[in-house]
Image 1 (tube, rainbow, N blue to C red):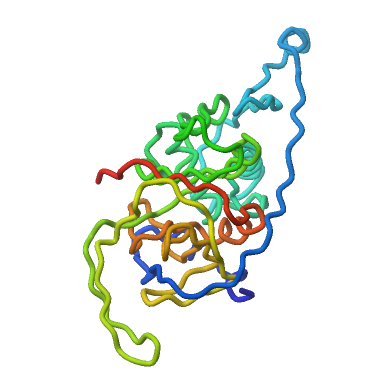
Image 2: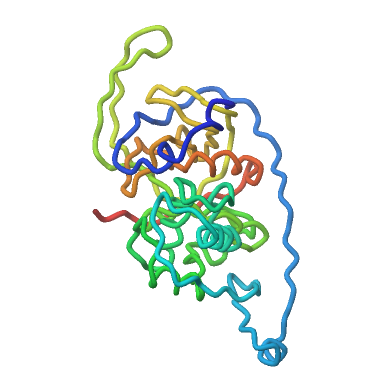
Length: 281
């Protein structure tokens, strides 16, 4: 686990290479209990906002301080105040960019991708006027299960986005890469002998619940999974070094590494996981 903490932005931002990463079932230990804290929502009447000359931004039913976008185009590698404002805004909306340090690296990029997808913008590494405008007036993620439990996970295969709701609030929104849908056959050493595994690399839709998990890197018969949280047999939410803009896994739901580091502390055992949609290439 320690080695993963020193991964640089290049590892997070890899969008083309497909790391051999899969899902397998083994006997697992009982998962840790989730440590979930609720957020207190304050109410600012619209008339007070008008008198103060401030427009209150409403995101997922929670009023926030108005955000005014800087008039500056940003690209990966940029540094400075505008980048820090971008990171702060993304984090406030639930798109965790990693460390808020004013450096536009891989964590910021994948958080930006998730935000753009939710807001109907084609994912790009450039932050220009359309993205800045959306950050001023953001859309909430589309709710897949309107009558779902207040605390649940929703995986949108069409958008390739995961949303963790806690007490009805979208607390964590992440870019993902699910099953590629491309049939595979892999030959690997497993349980002391060479074996061949074949499948359709599909992430099944349906309603599931989180079960067991592993801390750090976990070896399955199809590759390495970081901090996996299983929810459907051998299929898990897990961190990976490659989380491209297209589905690329053997069936699991890949997450950026920094998201996989914080998710276990937010997501407990027996939490509903709803998988919906279909990705169209």
